[in-house]
Image (cartoon, rainbow, N blue to C red):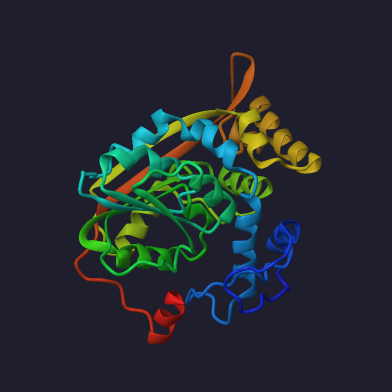
Amino acid sequence: MPSLLKVPLPVKEPIAPFRGLLDYYEFNSFFSYRTLARSFPLFNGFESNHFGAIKAAYRKQAPYLESCQLNKPKQLEWFTSKLPLTSDSVVLDLNCGTGIVSRSIRNKVKEVKGTDISRHLLSFARTKAADNVDFHHCEASELPFEDNTFDVVFSRLSFNHFSHRGEVMDELRRVCKPGGHIALMERVLPDDIDQEAAVKMEFLEDIKDPSHVAFMTPTEMNALFKENSIEATTKETTVCHQSLDEFMSQHQLNAVDYEAFTQFIYANMVAPDPTHHQTTGYYPHIVNDAVYITHHFAMIGGPNPQEKPAPKSANEQKQRKE
């Protein structure tokens, strides 16, 4: 668990002579990154630590993310087929990870810009980039793009890592053209999930991935759009089944955390009734003698309102451009 007591120094990009030291500081003191987000004044130590946790958690995951069940062509198509993409579209893929979604739509659009906070994932993404796909290292609430740049902006599987979702939505609305399309796809808690199972799922996700903040439900995603004056024209849900072995190998847990996580899953299989207090929200089951879990996904999309969010202060705008 990262320390919450260490306050980051006011530097925006890390400078370190050795990659090992950089990895260490990303996960432990995180003085290598700060946020300019208004929700975290004075380079808030907790949030900067969280950004470090994200970068550290994903530093070795690129190959696993590329090949995992959640990124199979069928899963990508389920999402991208619902986006209003045309040959003239300029598209933003927020928190693009390995760039797999950007690459999957590149032949359908004019240009794709992918952003991510993880330099490790972006390094991998750049090894596979196409002529009309470009990647940028930045934080989601501080995008290096002018107002009204994109016809379509989307984020897939990233909002569960944000504790400042409102500011990220403001930034998506800022860079999206009025009347352009904004879409989100997330792993979610089903609306009808048992409260105890929801709490346990959040707990287990934190064990598996220290960069996780909180899941949303489909209802909460709809509320997020309403709060930002976006009328949802697309609301879809689906499920994806993934083997427990693949799910666990992606995050390379230590032996203690691996044992703790899998014991909860096995207990859930033995006593799936909520009255036994062992439901986890992962809905484990057996397929061909292998343990599988179930992911619930929700997608929401709609047109960007004509009225833009309140502009940032002149000082904040200057800092973003630096």
